[in-house]
Length: 235
Image (cartoon, rainbow, N blue to C red; front, side, top):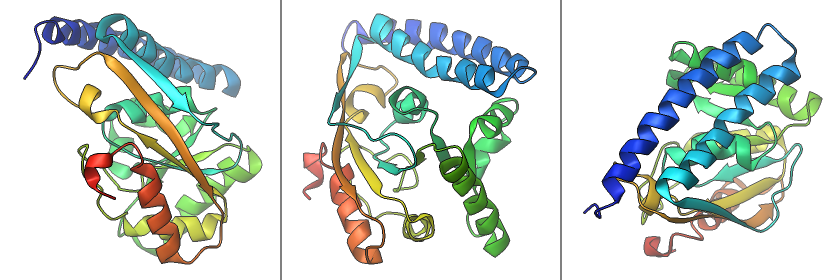
C-alpha cells in the first residue's frame, strides 16, 4: 500500500522525468549530425537526468558496493525494474547492452539505441541473426573496448524470485570468451511499483567469473551472484 507522500512524489517524478526524456531523445537525434563522442555524451545525460529526478522527487539514492571493472568485460546484472535499464549508462562507461528486438522497434528511441550501442537480440531467428549479434558485440568490446551487459534472466523478475537463466546467456558467454562481472541489485521493492518509495538502491559486485567454464557451472555461479541482495529467493 502506498504511503501518504509516495503518490505525489511519484507523480512529480513521472511528469518531470518523462518530459525531460523527450527532450533528451530530441537532443540525441540532433546530435547524430555531430561527432560520435558528442552523440554518446548526449545519450549519457539521460541516465544522469534519471538519477537527479530519483533523488529530488523520489528520495532515492544509489550505492555501489565493490569495484566495477570497466573496459571489455561481460556484465551480468539482476533485472528487477526499469531502473537498471536506464541506469546502465551511469553505472558503466558506454556499455553495449544486449536488448530485446522489440525495444529496437520503438520509434526514435530504437534509432538512438542502435547508434549508441544496443545489441539486438532476435530470439529463435537462426544462425544468421546470431552471427550478426555476435559481430556487433565483438566490435563493441574488441574494437571499442566497451563493456557488454546482459540481463541473464531475460526479463524483469520480481524481488524474491530467482528463476533459471535464459538459455541464450551460456551461448553468448562461450562465444565472447570474456570474464563475467556478476552484479546484484535490490531496486525492485523501491522502484518497481507505481508509487515508488524513498530509500537506497544498492548494486553489489559479487564476483568476476572467468571465461571457459562449463555451461552449468557458469550459469549457477551467475545465478547465485546476481541474487546476492535477494535473500527471499532462498539461494
